[in-house]
Length: 236
Image 1 (cartoon, one colour):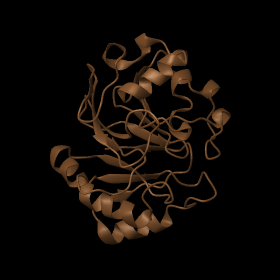
Image 2 (tube, helix red, strand yellow; image 1 turned 45 degrees about the horizontal axis):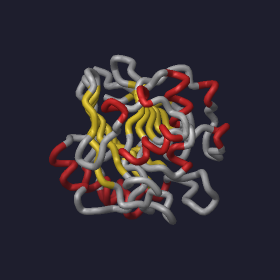
Image 3 (cartoon, one colour; image 1 turned 180 degrees about the vertical axis):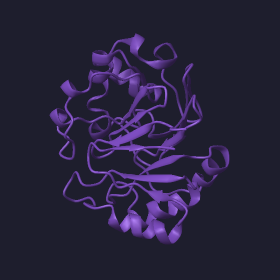
């Protein structure tokens, strides 16, 4: 049975459409909000059910509030980060857990998805940086690591959450590079891995080839997805 599909929309912006046609956006940053690696604009986003933000840097949160207000989607993120967006005008009713958000180890349960917030080794001006593990009602499980380095707790996620897909930053400079990301894939043991946080800024990696090659050596059981920006990949 098909288990939904994903689209890489540039940088760390990922769309996950579940098998029952619910839409989740991770770290949305559209072209009209300055994403040099994106082609999609806010006008082209017609529907969303949930928006998840890993931290408050503009390249991960710039389009989140606008998407929620346009589509009626709920927003998930760290307590102080969502509070900042509320202070900037986002409606409290658009934020999960009665406007509170969540913190590491917590998350949100909806009738069609369960979200668990994990640590990410990175900075954030509000709260802390997060990753997200999403378990859809059909059983599909996706880990979006946000901005992070490699860290040993990733082995725990493999034990607790059999992953269909891991979205892993590999651009270097601000996050893991290709070598770290390939080792992260080996620890996480997902069926598939999608490289993110590259081919946007000129000083991060511009190609996923090194990550794909290293992952083939470190974790040959992991299928590396290298779609073009905007291209959909069916899971399952």
